Image (cartoon, rainbow, N blue to C red):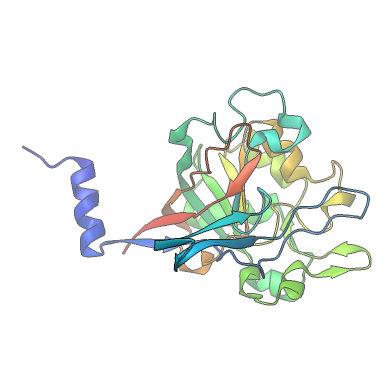
Length: 260
């Protein structure tokens, strides 16, 4: 009898023929949280409160309470996160079909351009150039924009806030509808604190990655790391959000399976 695909995968994981790459930031009190203008509500920073640690509060166990906003650290954005996706079916973290938490990834390397220009925007022309070398983006794929932004360990440098707002690379507003309608992607991922560019509040429409992706029942991944360890094509992402009832998103341990 031939081995099942899952048995082959299990052996490949044990042997190291398939590697597991962690694409997630660690969560602690220093984790950068998105800054919004003062008139808007605020996302709380990550906080860990010890319940007991092998002491009188619990002699044999250690555990904590934690609190944070849903969109803290490496996180998953569900369609209900944005007004355009609020009325779609299966749009929250507890109702998204679970098979959608596993999908292939296409990694677009814009690290050189982002290093030279914090406001660099990835365009359709960049995607078409990538496809000329790597093949067409297949329906149901994640598109991940590699910028090496996650290598900015200082939270202030990572957020890169100035008087006129954040300056972080992201997708051009014309790119997002192209990816949704002509490439039928499952979602967009970035290394910045959010999926849109830092200056996307000035775009038409504002925050196009949120507005258009979520309005078409697609997803987002933000604050990714280690995209430099992924191939342009061929990785499989595992992205399950916490099953929060009516959750707009959640911190996420994003993993990538990569054939050696």
